[in-house]
Length: 79
Image (cartoon, rainbow, N blue to C red):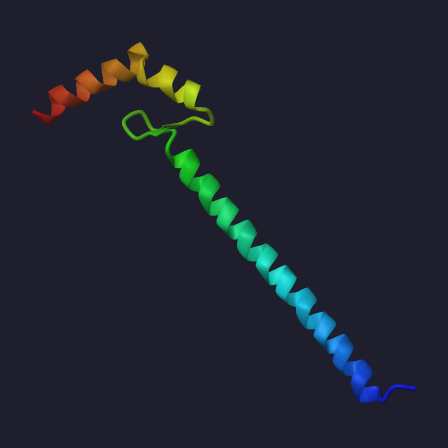
């Protein structure tokens, strides 16, 4: 029979490892969320205040008449 302290020590160590794994997982989740937020920010048109999920959609917008019209309008109003 093992002393109670030894069994408790093993359980405590196991809980600590489990807690560390949860902490690591939470930190990874936060890092992934931040990276995704940064990536989405790359597909945002400040001029038109429009957000796009895909690069192709953003590219289509940049080449669109509406975007070009706003660029011209903002250039005239800033002068």
